[in-house]
Image (cartoon, rainbow, N blue to C red):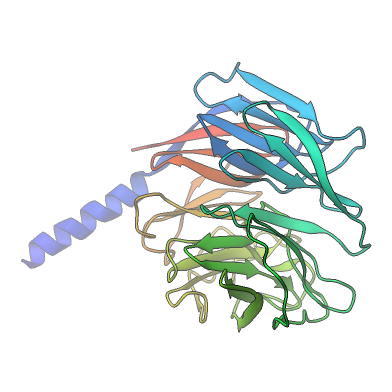
Length: 339
């Protein structure tokens, strides 16, 4: 029996070590920076710098389309989708919300946020069409966000957290919001790294949970989160000014974000901007990308292996359990796992 267990462990280790990615360019030498993508009907859609919005077919990359949402040189780092629409908002005030009809590829302005401190970091809808766009806080430390839903959620005396001085969000990959079931999580960074959590039954009642994540500077904190279910989740990040630093920059939770455990501290590839749990893996397999490399974990985030040294990629999204899209500075790539 011991020999069987040992053989199984060696086989599993060999499988982990054999994981690698084979890349193909969907768009190369594109004059734009992409930090927000969505997959729909065999196409990757993107919102980018210079007001650009478009798509590229995943199997026939020559099938592509692009438009400018504004004549102004706006920077978009958010992109969310419902069954029929895409939504995006530019990061800085005045921040204009746009909706793009999927069937016609036409855009229209929905709303403009003129509050001076508005800085939109992430935007997401769940499967029931309930959407949240999160901004950095107002000057007095109050949360600043917008809910978009067919249901009219009224703020009737909710309980909201106050941001600490120097606490905010990172507009790195449109992934500091996560949603599963009826639950929403929001990650912060800066002087502190915390998790805000609410239930759609009471979206103006937010709980606050501290984490042991790296913090203390405007450049440190949680950059990205993902949840497999309403219990297991992962957070990644670090310090974008010291990208090789790899202490307290990965953490997992098994109780829905109430407590977090540091993983692989000092034993990972450093700063990460986006993390995604592999479909059908039950949370076991996880990929994370940062400016300097791509890493993979096959044990719920406990250990990590660098599987690519590709640079200047900021965001990723699974197409299926064996392939992904990565995007970043001037390019969009498709990657397939090989053994």
